[in-house]
Length: 199
Image (cartoon, rainbow, N blue to C red; front, top):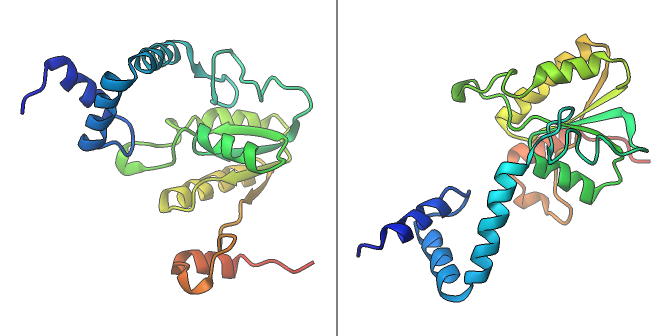
């Protein structure tokens, strides 16, 4: 069946989102047009405003509408602790789940030479300047436990070592409530070899 050109454009536009395939895009498009045109208008307006009004923090690269994001401009944050993450979603996850009161640097990805993503694309020159400033005492590396995330972590640790900044990596291991027999081998190995003393 052939749809109208505007409907096809809407469905194709929705498919740009992660996890949204053809069928999901159709369902969303039909829902918005059949049952929630006001919601569709609000979504369209909010998306247009966000695309034109949101940029990157000049210091940490987090999404913001200002020169500095709310974290970089906040007083009372611990400037001696700098946590490096892959995405703005990681900042929100750490903020929501922990009491971390340090600063962040958002890579907007991870090293991936096959995809053409190197140190320049991740803004690592800016990170090096920040670390070289003498204020940061510890670089907390919170990249994802993937091959690319591990390679990025090693690169960051080498940079920190060269600049005489302590580097640490967030722990990876068995999830809370998990049972060992159901944990994959890689995760179990990380947990086993990354064990620490019991207090």
